[in-house]
Length: 260
Image 1 (tube, rainbow, N blue to C red):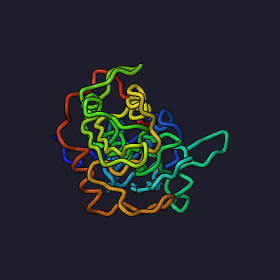
Image 2 (image 1 turned 180 degrees about the vertical axis):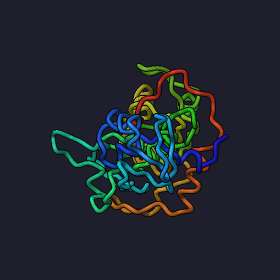
Image 3 (image 1 turned 45 degrees about the vertical axis):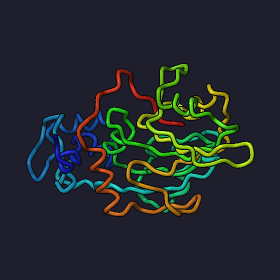
């Protein structure tokens, strides 16, 4: 198993592209032409990886490497998890305009869902957090219309067929009721498009409100809707310990972006 330091190493062409030197293909041409040095040594190997503390230069001029950043945002309803929307609708990244680095959301929540979103420019960590083979748990509080039976809740963990396959929750717990609705805590270890909404819809229970409260050990806590904060060093360490642990059995199908 590779250490977290080894996982922090990135392909040289990716580092160059992130620093604004052009497309990855153009950066590969810079490498093969012998114009790139790492710690003063010319590198021509396209698959060469560099660590965050190594010096990279092109034509003798050091590049400006973007530092890795990790932010937690409490997504309000009505915000999109995309970096570009031609209709000009509000985006989660609009809530972190004070962050100078180019960040993106880790996975997705649909427009009407709310709660914990992680934003980062660490692509490797983001991939591990969202790919089902790594089994990182995501916890949601869900208000549904009606009163799901014990059998229906059990079926959520045993598996329900939707249009793109059989999906299941890892754990489900009834939290209480209000009027003609029920509050549930649902834990997923995978994430297909609008998975929670589709599972419950198959049982005849409309989701009235869906809020993600945790990703792995990271919890939303008392952060107000629309607000953001940096992950603490302890939180980041815990998150990486979960993400870089031994892989679980790989999913037979290519994972789709999460959007419960």
